[in-house]
Length: 123
Image 1: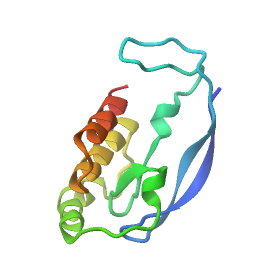
Image 2: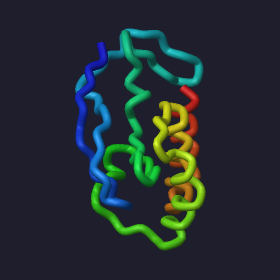
Image 3: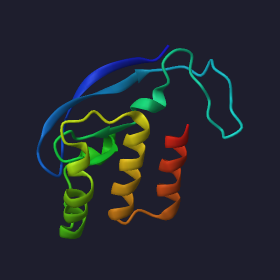
Image 4: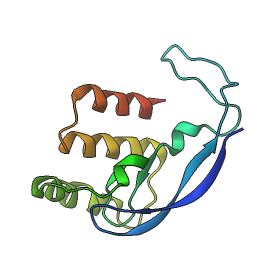
């Protein structure tokens, strides 16, 4: 059984404080799929791996919400392409992974990291 707990995140881009569930424990009692996804019994933890700031749309894994510097180009891309789309809307798990992949790409992440994010989103 997957257990979740709400956690407060501070967006490193806009400073917004928001709550998002984080995984406290899970299991691997479900089946193994051919794309290497191992199911959990009950709620699937993969749906809670990434988090999206509801104000600006910055999206990433838990560690991506630590204090950091962003380039002007990244801020501009996010402001023009993501912020208007997420304003006042709840983003589902698949959308979170898509936004996380975009943020990783715009921040210059290696291709294998971006591919892994898309792969996880496909699960």
